[in-house]
Length: 81
Image 1 (cartoon, rainbow, N blue to C red):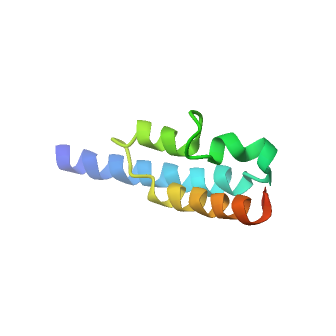
Image 2 (cartoon, rainbow, N blue to C red):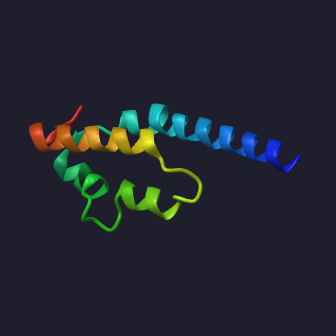
């Protein structure tokens, strides 16, 4: 049924985004000179813009939380750990 398919689709996207947080974003490490553009909200090539571009798929809440944490690390230490 269509409702069942939507539930399956939503579950699969949720799992995909969990994988992005766990497998990709946790590996974003390094100095501001390397990571500034992808974490800077004013950059044209940042994670936030990618998430916004695909907002019809998800709100990317966990991914956005991880990016916010990385931005705080970069601001506080000049380095993401």
